[in-house]
Image (tube, rainbow, N blue to C red):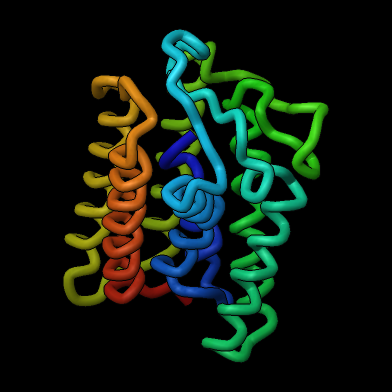
Length: 218
């Protein structure tokens, strides 16, 4: 699951109720992975490359108790909510941001092999759709396409609003295509977290622009 994580962010941003901007919600949607790749660079959490470990993803995510346990995800959600509250002084918006952060874990549960935990120790959980591309790829595509259509239908463009949404959509298609069809990594080098952080940063920036050039319909 990559761009599928952004579906809750798009859905929330389309409601028209007081909520964080789309760019902030894009950060929330991937906050757990941002933390994971940051901790990987710091040598705190780890992955290794095992070709064939799943049909779609060669990464063995064997050590990520601080980010991809349910308890860890909730902890990052609290941190995100507290940071957001300090910025906007609105508990409702902070709670919405936290829920988008938490949405990361159940979406990962669908695709991961059993490498997710409840509190950092066995048993491990994961429904393993990465081993079933014929299910995972249409599911993720429909999830994101539905969220984008919902967002487009519930918001209206201001200046550059159509352009910003089109570029965001194109960027999401491109990064997902690279994720699915690009050459798999051969080793667990810093290039993996750095490229992931770059992709997350690009999409969050485009989402920030989109959120500023579109507004919810009355």
